[in-house]
Image (cartoon, rainbow, N blue to C red; front, side, top):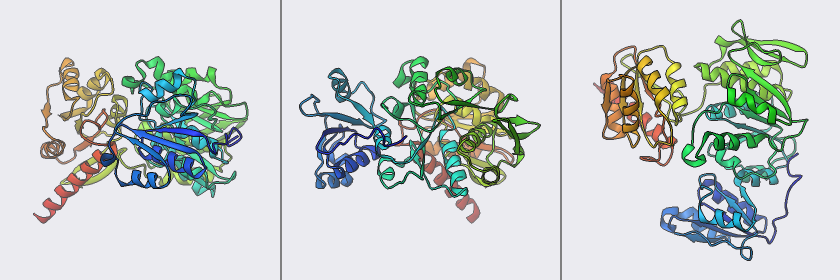
Length: 463
């Protein structure tokens, strides 16, 4: 199931494109396995830092400040990082000449003796992946959790056994460059517009997400969101056994909500699991994430008690509806991972309180019309910051919303929101945009938000 399609890469000429975390990890492992590795990145050696110098010491040829020119004489395989668009020259040259292109996910799969649970979708991936990992750990299953959430898998899987389980958050970018990747359990949580700057159309984005199903066989499982029309449609492409989950419908078979209880109804057995009120993570969208995690772990044979126990205590993940502090009766919530309009809408729906929303960043080709309608309905004051601020302002003004503040810096945005908030309010950072106009990552943005809030709290306590 894993490792069966392993290709002996000893002595092979391999080009690694991109020297971020996953590119460096791939370079190290390939070199350890005896491959002849060239790694390239358009950033300079100074920008890449000392970790790249350590790759050179290991025998990796590093081309910095430019891309390596690919031909069949110098390259037998290209391994690309998820952030590198397929339009970049080494990938175009490789494709034109029929040279295989793998992502780090494919490479990890080829080296892994352990089966995969792969979790994709526009929103909820990180939370669901972490929750599945916690349920497995609670049940005593040896597992690792990684993928698109910061831990490159390829360095981890080489230490595993067939008894382990790999729980991988999988992005559409990673799925562009798979070949044999076959998860034992593949979950698609939802599909809403995102990354259209990369995929150019919803059809392209949906096709990338659907690739997680393409190598599955009848003994595998496809966990799909029944409430999301596009995801439900993918059941026709599934080769494994389809397991639906639903927050809104009572299904003939699947994982769903009935009388405010999570119910598992599979293989002729109907099991009430726990009341939805006992699930610790807040929000309707997190109930969907919990249902998906229940389905993923149930089909792996995890006991109801272990699933139930974990759902009651799992606190969520950093940067996703993360409680930071309460200051003078105002809650500050870090949802920096809300990098598209649908994620921000779900965050707004999670709180009944009056809201001050901090939004803006780099637009990924999103349409803000639906978010604008939700802002008009739910948000007392909107504080905008970053490159996409004019786009969001235009969308909200179109629906007649006027209570808008424009911040000059991110710190100004947070302090403005704090100044405007009254006791009982929630100040919510849910940007609906990527972070790349002002930050290296959504984590960096969320960490700065937390630091500003904590500094504010400290100053107020000192009086």
